[in-house]
Length: 230
Image (tube, rainbow, N blue to C red; front, side):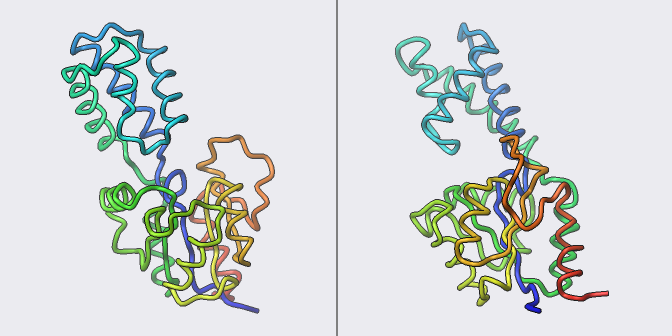
């Protein structure tokens, strides 16, 4: 029986609740812009900003510029500054790891399991989130879109992470919240897969993963069982 020697984690909605953070931050930004004098309805503004993110990408830095220009025909920097400052404050206050993330990473590290991250986020954003959550010391490798130029389910990020950890595909488990990217991409190269059901925002019924996790700590139990640890 091949022993598990490594775990690769997706970042957003797997280690941290990205969508919850985004929701709080956007709502705070809207309140900030209203307080600065922008005449908008909170609910419709929220829906519009989320649709701009969905169109241009969740990491796009110009979303509020686009939104304000749509409202008044130009970018008014008073409103923009108010929105960005409120957004950043709320983002930092609401950027949290899921329950048992620290406990799980600590337990895996004690077992001698190599740990990595594969994320479609840009390097700067991924590393800032990892440092903000104080998780940086756990990971032997962090592979982002900037490192590969390819998004999951491309095989490239998975292969690059395994090469950096000096692992074969069947010695590692990939865990993520997006089956079409995390599970499909990892399975393509022969990795075992776990679905972070606790972070699912799509209402996934059948993940196609080897394991569905309601709690990230289940990973420790699975690896102990596979590796024959008492």
